[in-house]
Image (cartoon, rainbow, N blue to C red; front, side, top):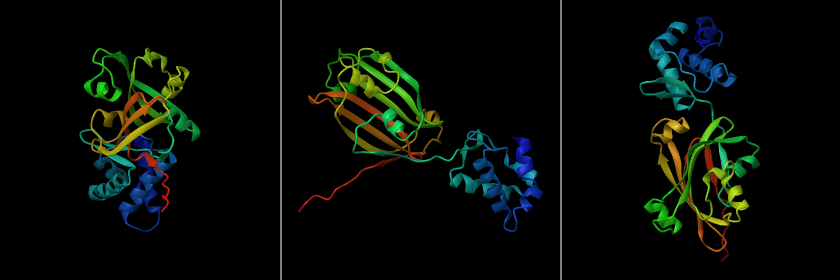
Length: 254
C-alpha cells in the first residue's frame, strides 16, 4: 500500500487535480482511493509525517485533510493504533410493524447474511432472565449470542435467551432462530421492543469494528406465543451508522 499511496499523493498527482487548497486536493485524493478500492476497509494509513513526505506538504495540511475524512466517517482514529480506512456503510432500514428475524429481514433485501457465534449454551437463568421469561431459579435456558453480518459488514450483536422448554438444545439453531422455533411449534406471534440510544463500549465496540463511544442502538425484545407466554428475551446492540428503524404511523379518528 505504501507504493500506491506514494503515487496517489505525489506532488505531480496532486497538482493534476487542478487549482485549490492543497488540503482539499489531498482529501479528494484519499477519498477517491477509498471509493475506488485502492484503499480498503481496515487498511491503516501511514503516519502523518510519511503522508506529508509523499505529497511534499506540511503535516498541518495533512492533518486537516485527515480530520475532514474522519468527520465524514471514511477514516477512524484509534488511540494507540493509528488511523484506519472505514468502508462507507449503506444504511439498512427495518420496519417496526413486522415481527421478523434478522435472517428473514436481510433475505427480503437480497443481502447475504452470516453470523459468528459468540455464545451458545444451556445454563441457569440470571435474575433478569428469570423475571422476563417467568422461570424458577432451577430452570434452564438456551443462550444464543452472535454477531450478525450483512455482506461483509458487522451490523449487530444479538443475545437471545429462550426457556429450555422451547429450545432444549441451542446447537439446533444454525440459522434463523425463528425458523427453528417454528419447526418446534413455538414461533412467537407478537413482541414488545424497547429501543434506546447507546454509546458503544468494549467489547461490543471491538466486535462491531467501531470506536468506543460511537453511537448505537440498544434494543430489548420480549416475544410472546399466541397463548400469551413469553418465549424469547433478547438484548441486541446495533451500529448507529448502519441501521435505521422505521415505524409507519396512522392518524386515529376523531
